Length: 144
Image (cartoon, rainbow, N blue to C red; front, top):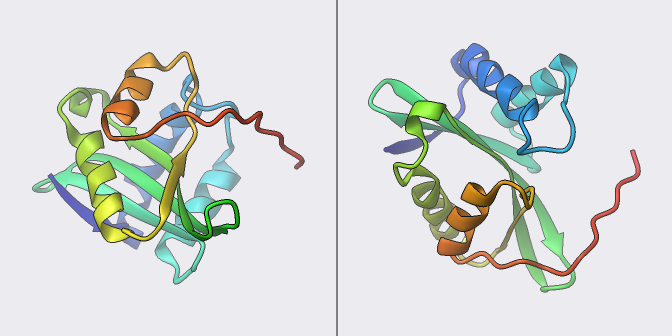
């Protein structure tokens, strides 16, 4: 598997993967075409806040991921939020997610890595635990 930054030519493929991801039980909100397009545009810009990656095998796109950057005052160091990680159904269960998580860890060795996962998504929870993630006892709150 290769990991590369998103390119403008990836837009249709990424949007096609975002739609099922955001309509699945893996996320709380369903998103919208406007949000998907805005997210993609941010990923391919020179934004310091969001970057997008394509996971591929040769010319076959296996999935995508988006990372958001911030600073954690709780941990006193940069924070990388793994906002989206999506693998096409045929690419799941083949070890690609742990490889991507290792890539993030290696790319940002001084950052705390965080992600959100629905508790019911036991397969993802298991994969994240195997990659060294633990749970925090926080109640997440939102104000839009």
